[in-house]
Each structure stands twice: as structure tokens, then as C-alpha cells.
Image 1: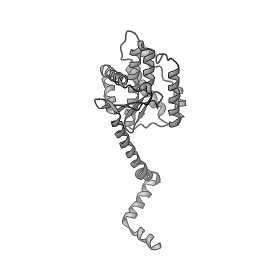
Image 2: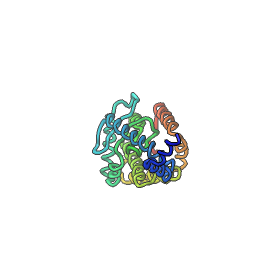
Image 3: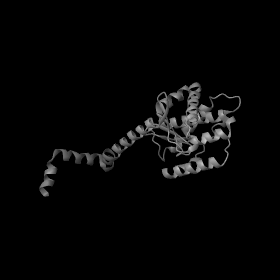
Image 4: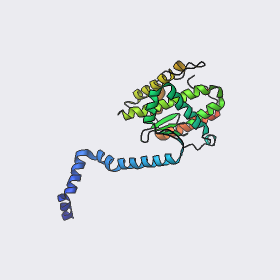
Length: 245
């Protein structure tokens, strides 16, 4: 046993490994040898899964359906509504449309989020489209309003991707400022939309209230999923007023 240890210590590769561990520290080695490869595998599997579940493609952006709810089994409205939202952004705000094209690879329909979320690993914008579909069925005369709000949510999530690409991670120290920036981007987009019926500039996106986010920030990911499901049940049981009003 002693001889084996002496041979190991004299081995140049083993010494280099020791120096590597000593210089980079245990946490970095755990990341380099375990977490980073696992992350790469997860990303590859997620992309393969999303390619299989792709229901449409708009330029470089894939539309994906992860929905399991019977009410949301028909994807035509999701495809048409997303196409119209992106066309609205392209028409009135080309700069933010370029950000969307650069930062979003997937727009995913899923019930497992409250309204929307951004997955930085695969550049995915997840949206709970079931709620929009329910709102449109209850209030079809507000179609223009919901379309504008949906487009602004895509811009909000693309801004998350843009900030992450610029090196601003989402953390307890930065999240309030990041959400405020994303909210401002929504308002700036809304201010560009013309309408004879609505005052999008003032009414579509209300003023940012940091206190509204505190409960969400303190939930674990599983708790957020459960909260999203609860909110979905409330949406099904109660008629909802137009967003932002």
C-alpha cells in the first residue's frame, strides 16, 4: 500500500491533478468534473426533446408545446397568436425584435409556470398560454389588448436573456433591478403601439412594484410549479378582467 502511494506521488499526471485541485479549489473542481458535464447533457437532452415537440418554426425560433391539458390540446391558436405577436413587434419595434431573434430559440407553451419564465440554458421563453386562451374565450372583444400584452411578455423574457448574455446573472442581489429593467422594456414597447380603443402607453403595463415580486422570489422551484397550477385552477373557475386593468 505504501509503495503504491509512493508511485502515485511520483506520477507526473497525478501531481498535475493535485496541483489542479489545489489551485482551483474543491468547488471549481466539482463544477469542472461533475456539474458542467451534467449541465451539458441536460442541455443536449432538452434541445433534442424540444426539437421533437416543435409544432412550428418562425425563422430561428421554434414553437414548442409541453402542454398536457385537454383544453390546450389544439395548438393552432398558440401558433397564430404567437405569429401575430411577433409580427406586431416587428412592425412597431424592430430593435427589440432583433433582441428576441438573438436571445430566444424556443417559445414554449406550458402550464408549469405562473405567466412566463426564461430558461437561460437553452434560451427558452416559457409561457402559460392556457391562461391567454381562457381569457380570449371569455373576452374575445379584447383580442387586441391580450395580443399586445402577450407581445410585451415575450419582450420581457427576451430582456432577461439579453441581460444574462451581457453577464448580469439573476441572483438575490440583482433580481429587483433586472425585473425593473425588463418591466421598463415592456412599457417602452407598449408606448409605441397605436390604438383607437386603448391607451397602451399608460394602461397596458402598470408601474413596477417590487413588493409584488417578493412572494415569488421566496418560493422554491417546486413551490412555483404548485403556485402556477393553483393559479391555473383559479383561472378556470373565475372570469378574469383584461390584463393590466
